Length: 294
Image (cartoon, rainbow, N blue to C red; front, side):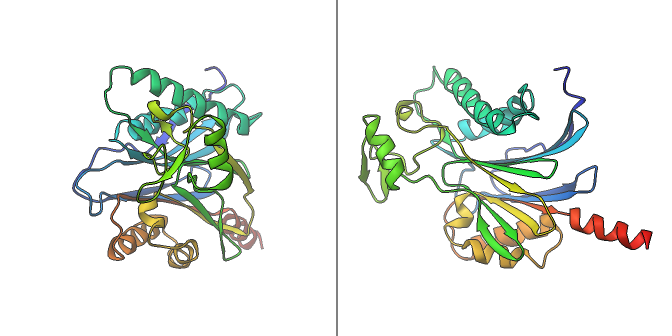
């Protein structure tokens, strides 16, 4: 723990809200990024989505940690991952020196610990995770499941995660190589049960439904405008391009998240809807400093 200068400099605590939308936001201490979130049960009677927006300082560097976690089979897995994943990550001894491997280890460790805690449960629970870690000028996006991360770079919408679906050729091959099967049951499902091929939890399907994240790194420069993390309650009814177009004119990321949430609801999304938007302000900070020094 000695390598941590401070823990939990700023964190959004999420209360369980089953009947009302919630939203909020914040700004990093160094002024390099702002964030906003919005979350609603939507048309569902229960809430299985969770989110985390957290700013810490590790080895003197301000870091941002953002995540959306969409539970299935109940809220247990999503709530556990929300509470533990980022804490496990920033405690990793290689968090700064090898962030990519630290993220993969933290996903694996969190999954293992959740499964241990599930020994007395009769019903399987699982969760997707779409996370974004900001370290200096690096943005590392990690994903398991069908929540999604999309960036706006130079005005273009770019998906920086891949939805993990059982009918994808490589995912289906991996599942079948492990002795499992994929079949159609309203949609393609692992073992005829689960519509995502990677997730936390899902103890009875763990041999096939792994929590190994795919990790993509992006450079934070003056062409990177903002990031959208969202559960499939948004992406089922709003395209990547539409989400970026709607968010672009809204410089307050909380307002952008709320706008997307409302749009998904109005378009008939039948799922919980959770959105985190991160705006990158480095180019704004640099331009204002140039103006003040002129």
